[in-house]
Length: 222
Image 1: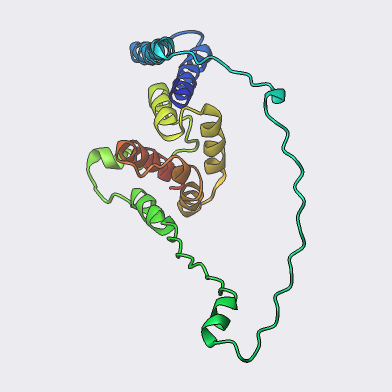
Image 2: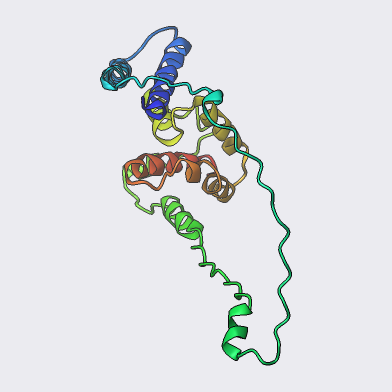
């Protein structure tokens, strides 16, 4: 069974459930569709596991008695005899055979360096500012006092699922830290060294949501 995938689906289901509880049990049509989709995916994982386990043959355990093996006899080890000294009359070929072999030194191949710099560069691109001056950009540049309160319920759920691995507690802790910073540069260093790197915001399927969330964070420090 794919426990990693089922665990992620359960986290997403819990996030939707907790959000519905916070809003007195009301859910939007989009939230219902998401919940049904997560439940279908979880059902498929469990159903597939049942089919694969029934098809696999059951191996019979075999126990072997210790008494069936003969007890080895004690072997007496004789002390090694000292080699006789080589006389000067012996040939050089005989002396070569007596010499001990030289130890062979193992060569250690250099390990590749970690690509931490490339990952940091990919994340830094997400934090580049957009200088467009259209009406929508001007509206999105208005300052905010709290990042979490400035997000809609659907936007918050999608952000938690895509950028925080479905972990609502992690989202709340990160937003609390971001609201306490004095500048966007502090927030940038905090995210690049933490959740943005761990959750791999630079992946193609996460870039769009990451850029939108970072623009909202920037408005906290205007």
